[in-house]
Each structure stands twice: as structure tokens, then as C-alpha cells.
Image 1: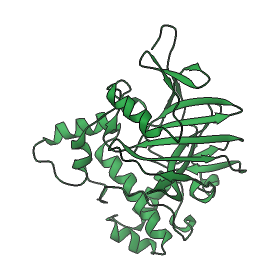
Image 2: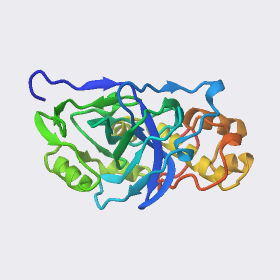
Image 3: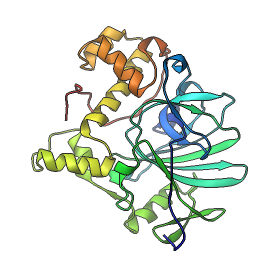
Image 4: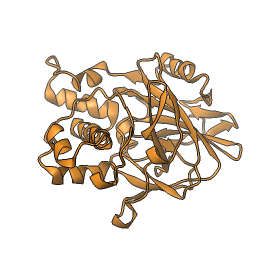
Length: 291
């Protein structure tokens, strides 16, 4: 970073929506709002606030890069606030409001929060695949937070001592490829593999350390978030709460309710029927006791 420049750590103002396979499915991915939009923890009186899945029209598309899960774009909607839900991936998010553009590194989110919706904002984001990270920006320090990179020009930011043009939806893959070539983004394939199969060649302690380094979260938290996503999908398709709890390995319906309140910000009864999202997560749902 050039002398005199610094990285600002901001509280996580957010907007969320899920996108998958080039088809818009409003859902759970986080967007970033300007710095003056502050999200707040959920409160009982506010849990009736809609999720972004019910508010935002999100365009999304896939990527050929193993480092990227998807990219997306959307814009503000005329509502005061929405429920932003937990996510296990980190994002690069570009926000433009009144011709001012910011690039924000947004970390994983471990809880649902009520977030105000700023007016007149265009959003564009890149969601990175599980196991992809920036060595210079430890993800453990980005959990439930965001870092807005200092501007170099109206359309560029300072990153790792160099000026980088802010990416657009048309050059997202090119932007990521440049970051990879410069060694600013790397991927630990063992981390992604460990959520699909047992990794015998790595000790449990070493694996846990690598997961935290590459994701900022523990394996248990990542699995719990994935399971809550699958629960919303099942409930949205009409499955009953008891059957959903049984299918996904919750101890009972009460544990399902607690999980949804924490990660989704809603109870089973507040989840409307319909196609909520398709994250195409590689994770298999496990019990909350998984490590």
C-alpha cells in the first residue's frame, strides 16, 4: 500500500441475494452498502422484515475460474431494510452511488442482521469459492466485517502497493486472473475437498488450521450455515418443519428453529413457499456436533 494510504475496516453494511448457474434466484449472497449503512443484529420485533430473496432482482452468472463461485449484479429497491443472512464465502463488492464507486472486501457472515437499504446504489460482486483467500488479508479478521480499499482514482483502488482498476461485470474473470497471477489470491484445494470427502493425508488439527486460514470460519460453522440454507430450501418447497429437521439431522424441531433464527433471521413459519435459492453448495448437511 502506498505511503499514507490505509485500509479502512467498516462494519458490515449489507444486502443479500443468491445467484447460481446464470439464472437469477433471489437468495442469500451479501452485497455491500455504502459506509454509512450499518447493519444491526436481529431483534424479535424486527424478524418479520423480508430477506433479500423477497426484495431484490439479482442477475448472476457463473465462472470458468476455480477461484470463483459466481458473480452478480443488482440495484437498490424501495424498502427501508431487509434481513441479510449468514454466508460462508467472502466477496469483492463494487458499489456505485451518485457516481462514487467503492471496492470492498467483505468477509463471511456468521449471523443474520437487519440492514438498511441505501437509495440509488448499483451493486456488483464476485463470490469466491470455498478455499480461495488473499494471504495479505487474513479472512479471520474479516469475519462479520468489511474492508473498503482506498481510492486511487474515481475508477481504481490501491491494493498491495499498486493501483488496480475497479472490475466491472464484463471483466470480472480477467480481474480475478490478474490477482491470481500476482499471487494476491490463492486457493487451498484441500479445504474444499475436506467438505466432500475425508482427507486422510492431513491430520485433523492441520485441517482445522487450514480451513480457518482459507475461510475465516471453523468447519462446524460452515456446515451449520450450509445446513440452514438447505433447511430454507426444503421449507420453501413445502416440507414441514419436523420433516426438515429430521432430514437434515437436527436434534429436534427446536434446534432447527434456533438455527434459522441465528443464520436466516426467520422462523420456519416466516419462510414463504417458493424457489428461494440454489447455492449449489458442495457441503453435505451434518449435525451441529461436526468439527
